[in-house]
Amino acid sequence: MQISENIQNNNYNSVSLKSKAASASVSNSQIKNVSSQVQSVQKERTEKITKNEDLVKEINDLSTRKNVGVNFHKDETTGQNIVQFIDNSTREVLKQFPSEEMLKVIQQIDKFLEQHGKSATVGDLLNEVA
Image 1: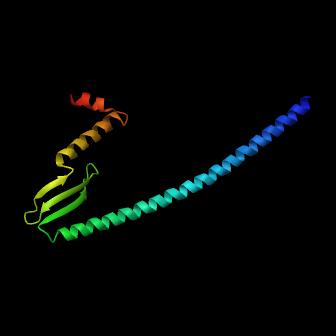
Image 2: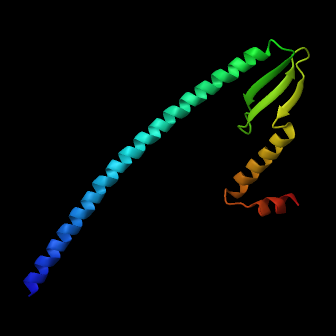
Image 3: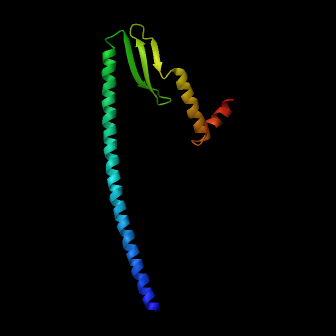
């Protein structure tokens, strides 16, 4: 009886190991598939960024022909994309999105999150401001 049970247990363990091995090979296949998809998405993203940069350059080139220009750039401190409408004759910024005030708010929120961690809540921020 003992030998029969051992044989059955060994057969079960063998089947279990084969099943786990099959699962592992499927997982590796899935990993390769996901990796391929990630590379494809990264390539598409790079192409879109390049296309957007070309579009921004074209808009900036066209705006130099009018009295009001449009300037696109990235704020170095916050990383936010900035759009400015500029009077071409005086170079004065007529309007900016987001505004300087909003950029300051973003900086303060980033500073708060760096000090208190990403798990900080809006309540924590309000308590510190108050």
